[in-house]
Length: 96
Figure 1: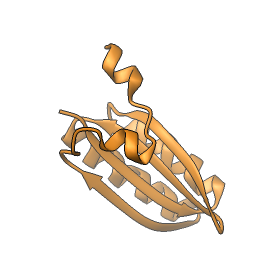
Figure 2: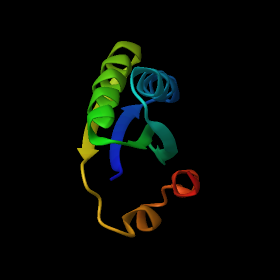
Figure 3: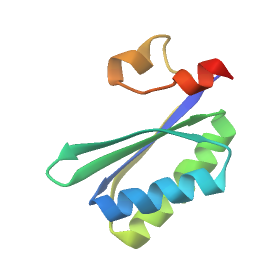
Figure 4: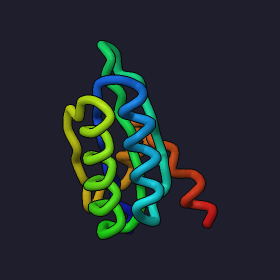
């Protein structure tokens, strides 16, 4: 079952650092990066729960080092259809 991980940072460079660290730290897929406004950027990854936890921890550490981490969150078993509501593109996972 897919799980999701989110990291929200202030600034684009910390977002890039977080995304890079997350995909290098664990077997996760980058499924979203959205500029919220006011300098906030949210990065989203999907994968198995253990990999997501590892990735979010690594991404949060990288974001703290590169700038300002606002928050990090893991969703272990997202509700069916939730990806469509929040705009995550998980179509690559469905084809595998």
